[in-house]
Image 1 (cartoon, rainbow, N blue to C red):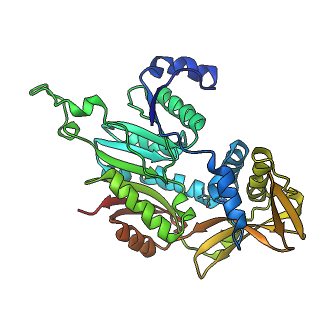
Image 2: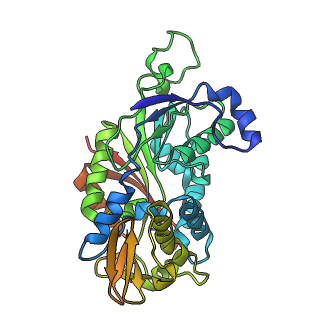
Image 3: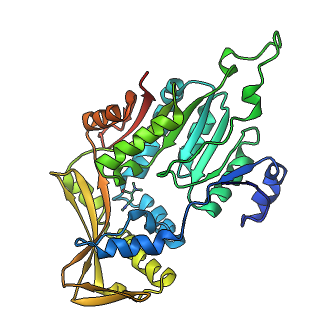
Length: 361
Ligand code: AVJ
């Protein structure tokens, strides 16, 4: 693990570079050097299994992230705008429940509107800790936020949040006891802050339930006593709505799914014929999950480096699971990991939920 003092080598629009300039020296990034060389190993291992799979985290190269942003704007894709609506409508209650004087840790660092809503309303924030596996994306969004919140202590961490990693030390201001009789110092800013993890977007749905439990237990360990988790969780609903959300008319989701093969071709010297695979996504109401696949439209062989992979016609590569929960299913899952549900906010159609969990005493 290394500590990198951030300087202006990051590719940012000029306005940001100059405006954030005075903050650059103040911001230190903790770099756990998340291993990116495993792309080849994980792809080959996934494609050697009897049911070929690819981990969904590999969707998000530059083009994939751009396509995902487009998905979020689609009429059919309700989660993003619904979660945002809940955050906007209920932020007073949400921030009241989180309370003052916390350290906010965001998994999958956002420069997004959702992060802004929280940062605008949380009072007495001890620090904001964005965590992301992509160094460039992390620094870009951290510097942007440094412009917008010049008073905020930002402590970026480059890490894979599905692995264990240490949080940066609390900012010095949290550790020095306030001067007696200094006045104006609110009771709540005294002592170490509570750690609250923010995990929006229903990314939790990408984990298999057992993995989700393990992940949540890791969050419990990380935020410790009095800690909390503010999480976006997509809900079970009419399968037709779900089907549309992952089978949009303009084909953006199909392009997003197929992009992983393009990435393999480019980064791992592959020769997948992307025209010979088709996007296929469906909701399984028994398991309660969306599955995304790439279906081989012919009997064919694809190569990655020196490795050959044979596909029968109709054989699929399973590229993503997206679990949908009922409120009581998620409460059970949270409880089994050591969390208690303290707040649940949904939209008027019960499409999506934002939930606040706290570590069980
Ligand atoms: C970002 C993982 C929540 O599962 O809905 C969108 C990703 N995949 N369309 C989801 C995704 C296809 C998305 N998550």
